[in-house]
Length: 354
Image 1 (spheres, rainbow, N blue to C red):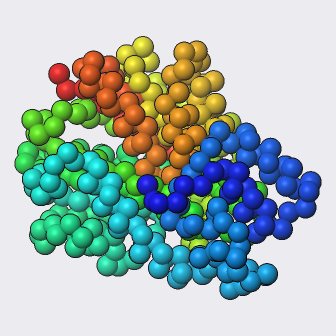
Image 2: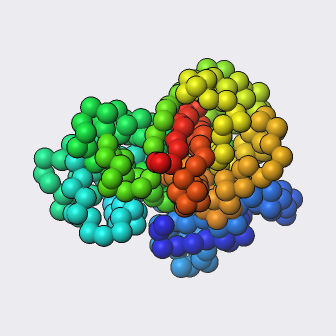
């Protein structure tokens, strides 16, 4: 995680200042904060918990000019994304990084891009081999970690010596917007910064972990305009329609059934539900759609509460929480799902190595 941990109440206070809210607007904002299911979020920016005189990223001027440009936001991404990524990668290993002889590096982000980019920064910081296979997944949003897992799985099936490092790094809070639109308010209440790393290998003797058993993806064209992520001169702009939870509630159960059928499974085979906590209403929609009764999504709610929605790393935070009990019992099956622009739904199935 980045160094700055912000309480939702402090971010709420920051939003009131920047959006210049009156008392009625602020009461509505407080209600939304209370209903968000989020207590804390992390950021590379300290300003969200400070008074304006102590801001480092945003201008201290009364009219907030000059408001951070896309160039300034990308400069901060280039400064902070690589160190957070390397911390996540080191946390993935118990010993020296070089003992693992990483053959492939997949970097994932939708909140910052440049060339040369994050992959080369990581290579330099960790002194990785100059001939390492590397690729980047950009701008795929919250489901991108599963897409990276699919690529890593394909690599490992074709190269039995492959050791593929995936690192998902998102600095969502760099893209705060000052116009008090519904989309900007929703994004400001929801997104945080974070990074997660995963090692995928063809050889299960290296580490005891989960076996990737299958993937399935679908696009819901009727939700195409309800979730989007676009570049602008003032940063990246999020569209996040309030209709998304209804779309997911309507379509998630049949999607889940098709995904499980693809892996020759049924709902009763699943012991752990690793659902991307895109927001409280999305989790509630899935809970209702799948007729859950016994806290099946408690881990997802826990990650949302402590970190908010970090986009692509978030589902890996949920998976890590589930990993220890799964490996201890050596039984169970994980069904994972995440959602992003499109509206795209990506899923995976995994189980402990015997």
